[in-house]
Image (cartoon, rainbow, N blue to C red; front, top):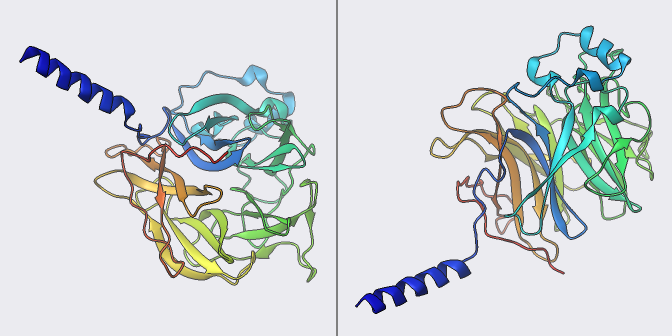
Length: 349
C-alpha cells in the first residue's frame, strides 16, 4: 500500500511539473502604473511608471543645478518628486519577468526633474526610442512636457535625444503627458497624448525627433472622445483603428478603460463603451492600459494597473495581464480581471 501511495504521489508530482505555470496578477513585485507592453528582439517588454510609497532614498545629489531649481521653485507632490526614473521588465512568455533597473534616469535628461510618467517605446532603424512625460507642467512657459530618449537596446540606457521637450506647451487644452507612439502599416508614426480631458494626435518625422504637419496643414489634431481623461492607446485590427483611453480619477475606484472604433489613425472614432473596470472580487481602479498582439495570431493581451482591494493609497498600483477578446463583429468584450493571470505565451520564432 505504501508503495502504491508513493507511486501515485510521484505521478502527481510529475504531472504538476509538466503543467504550464500561470502568471499571477500582479505580475511583478512593487508599485508600478501606466504599463506599456511592446515586442522587441523576440521578447515582451513592459515599460511602466514607477509608483513608490515615498520610501525611496533622497537622490538630490544626482541632480544638476537646473533640476534642483525646477524642484525648488514648484510645489511638487511627494510621489512625483521620487518619480525620476523608469524600470522595465522583459519576458519570453508573459509569465517569467526580468527586471531592468533605471533604463531611463533624469541624470540623462537635463531638463527633466520629477514626475517622469507613462513611457512609450518604439524601434526605428535599429535604435530604440522612449517617449515620456516629465515635470507635470500646469501652463505654457513652464519647463517640461513630452520628451524623447534614445538607446541602442530596449533595456537602455536611454539618453535625451534632442536636448529639450518634443512637446512643451498646451495645444487644444491637452496637458502634454501620457504619450503613445503608433506605427501604421505605411510606416508613418503617430504620437497620441494628452491629459486634462483632451487628446491630441500628431505626425512624427522619420527620425522621430520632431513633429510634422498633416497633409491638410494642421499639426495638433484633437480627437478627444466623450469621457476621455488620459492614457490614450491605439491598435489596428482587420483594417479598423481602435482608440482606447482611461476615464475617471486615477486615485479612485472609478478609473476604467473605454474605446472607440474608426477608419483611420485620426478617426472619426465612434465610442463603443467600457472594456475594463473595477471588480470588487479582484481589484479596484483598473486603468491606464496597453495591448499586445502575438504576431501571426489573433491573440491579444491587455496590460494594465490596478489597486489592491482595501488599499486607498493613490500611488499603490500594481501591474496585471489578462486576455482581451474580440467579438465576431469586431467589438471588444469586457475584460475579465483575474488573479491567476495568463498561461505562458512564447513568441513565435
